[in-house]
Length: 115
Image (cartoon, rainbow, N blue to C red; front, top):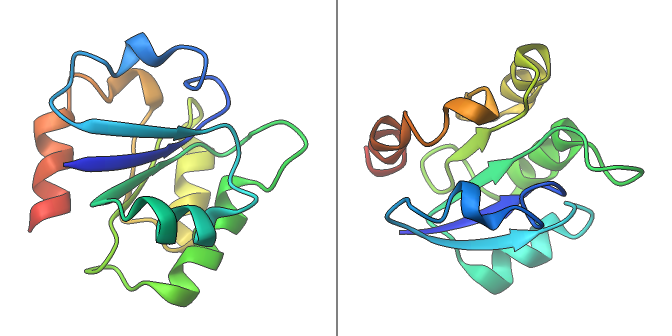
């Protein structure tokens, strides 16, 4: 499984997701989210909410949903703030998880992405 990760922190801390059974491709921001998805062709997207002065995750999710529906591209909000994840879900994310729970819930995530 290939997962495109939009997260400015995880670009520098790839060891956080490294033990998980997936091919992770990282981007520090989602300003070019549509082009990045077209280039990488991921099975799923992990989206942080806040990436410095760049496009917010909520807005990037809206842009991606204009091109891909829920079945075609699972988008998982992975902000450290549950309120931000809820905002991304309202914008069209498939699900939202507190970032620190991603490794423990990875099998569940894979289920969302393959169902």
